[in-house]
Image 1 (cartoon, one colour):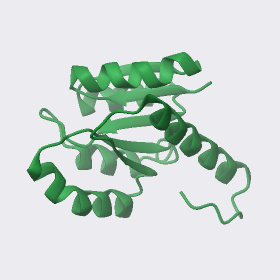
Image 2 (cartoon, one colour):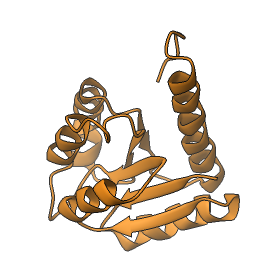
Image 3 (cartoon, one colour):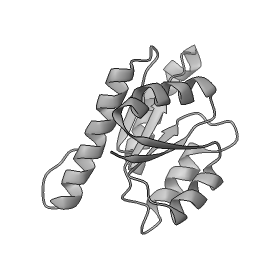
Image 4 (cartoon, one colour):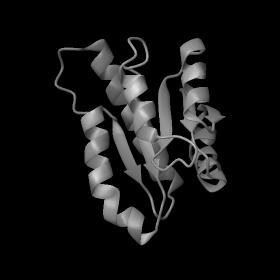
Amino acid sequence: MARILVLQEMEQNISNLKEALLPRGHELVFVRHELKALQRLQHEHFDLIVCAVYLQESDVFDFTKALKHHPTLKNIPLVFYCSAVSSFARSVRGGLKIAAETMGVDLYLTMEKFDPELMARQIETCLKNKQEYVHHPGAQTVL
């Protein structure tokens, strides 16, 4: 299965990701700050990155920019995960999703009511799509 780096600060989201992905055999490595994530990424292999959309101590878009401009890290699939239910979060979600897609984020996943099966399926589909694209770069794979 996949080795996944998770940039996440919220304990509930960490628990949710563990619930969804550990039973499927994925290895999860958790970090709480973008600089630590970038350090780990430069020295260890990961198949996918799951990143919180809202970070208190980091900027998710700075992290994405650094990742997408790095020659060896830019092809790692990147998933933004948001579970915020505030009215502010709902009001800016569309703009954040467009910005994320423009920057090359592979999947923007929002779950106000956590569904571990849906989470696992979405993550595994993202992994599969990226693997197919890498193995068949001429294919018209929509990510």
